[in-house]
Image (cartoon, rainbow, N blue to C red; front, side, top):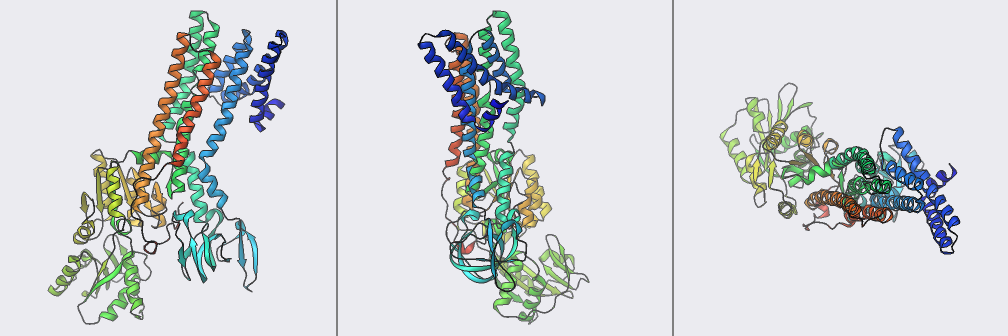
Amino acid sequence: MRWQQYLNQHPGQASLVLAGLILVSWLVGWLRLPAVALGVMYLAGVLGTIPIALRAWSALRMRTVSIELLVTIACVGALAIGEPNEAAIVTFLFLFGNVLEARTLAKTRSAVRALTDMAPQQAAVVDAAGHVAAMDIDDIEPGMHVRVRPGDQVPVDGTVVEGTARLVEAVITGEAAPVAKTTGDQVYAGATVDSGALTINTTAAGEDSTFGQIVALVEDAQDAQAPVARFIDRFARYYTPAVMVIALLVGLVTLDVRLAITMLVLGCPGALVIGAPVANVAGIGRAASQGILFKGGATTDALAGVDTIMLDKTGTITTGKMTLSHLHDFVGHADADLALLAAIEADSQHPLAQAIMRAAREQHLPLPSAPAMTTVKGRGLVSADGRYLVGNLRLMQSHQVPITGDAQAGMNDIQRHGDSVVLLAVAGQLRLAVGINDVVRPDAAAGLTALKQRGIQHVVMLTGDNHASAQHIAAGLPIDSVQAELLPADKLTVVRQAQAAGHKVAFVGDGINDAPALATADVGIGMGGGTAVALDTADVVLVRPTFATLTQAVHLARATRSVTRQNIVIAVGTVALLLLGLVLGVVQMASGMLVHEASILVVIANALRLLHHQRGPKTTQLDQHQVNVAVTKVN
């Protein structure tokens, strides 16, 4: 038992002890002391077999026939037939292989470990009297004020209440360029202060912060298996007993115990069992370091098989930075009507509402009190008494608001420029029509082209906006089809129709109205600047919301699947060649075990390539001033 404890605590040293005993046995044998040499080799064989046998017993108690059981039976048999050297060498190679495997597998988790090491541990908290004191991050609560200075790491999520600074948010968004922050701006734990100083009102800290949730999400994803990995686990569960039965039959037919024992050793599917999980961990870890959060191995596998990508327009194909570009007033009270419209939209986070609010602020319009409004999905807002209506043409028509010739001309003018139309009606009279436009992301064309180069066959834009605006945005982009004026349920229907036609669909969105389509698609991809609902629903979160990141996500998913398949071929091919060599008499137990352990290291090394996988084709990066901070809440 002490030897087992020593092995568990110091596996590398224990392997060296076995190697030393084997070398001592060979040396004593060279000195022509065969009895002593045999005794030392038996000692090495027994010491090596004990921990493997205990692991096999533990697995059997859990009703699992493990690889360790094969090795144990083979080594006990070797000791019984007077071949302790075979038992000693096989157990040494097996245990030493486990040591190398564990250390190498730990390296594949380096991306998550690096994130964890970056997590802030303390914060400089400012009390009501202005005194600053260090406090453990786990003790920080929302509402506390935290101060950060040049070179400091931002310890919490929060809002700037004092000061200006430039922050490097690469750990969150993947973007290395410093970002200017001032009063009212949102900041995230993990960012580093490049210059300046800030006082931050805490909204979340520790595990609840965006940074903490990213770490937790990636750790959970790395532990979640892809379908191929689950299949391999099931295969290994039946494969191991099958090898034992075959070896028994071989022994009974040939009466060659040594051959049967060797078959047990060489039939171990070690590389097969480790090949898929290590590729999964490495691929997800690499993606995390580039601002791509896969929520499990099944997601990676699904994204690798996608042939159709459907994208929401606002905030996905476009930047989401909407501006009011046209205003048509039909009653002669433009300023008052715009102020009323802004007051009604004041509590909304929708990009169109934010554009209206910005326009009212820029004109310094005082906002009147606004009635309580109810949302009508896909149409707009309605007051309880039906007196106030804000939304699209369908909303006005459903409430029998007359559309005059001037009003229709005004809407036509707005739509001719590809702008979204927002209408205001009061007491059954259409008073105002405003046009709001958006800007296509600078890297959209290059990013969508790169996706098609990587095998994406269909790119579809889905939007609730009008047809003219949708076609205006799609012009010049490699988009195969556009479907406009869709309700959230309509987007869901389009996704299901494509799936029914045999397509594997990824839906990319960022809004609450995208959540049903995100959940229904084979892979839901949430843009990092989107709402918490969209990010909760998505299978993949792009922390840095660019098409370059989307392209890289597809690139890494396919690379991970490719490496997994390569590892399966390597593992199965190695076992087949070893058994063939055994039948032909060119492979022995020790040499076969050496090749077997080498195959495990080969599949691990193959998976490690993913940690250094290069990005796909480069696309134009967004100007940092066009991108809001990427993550609101990830989990």
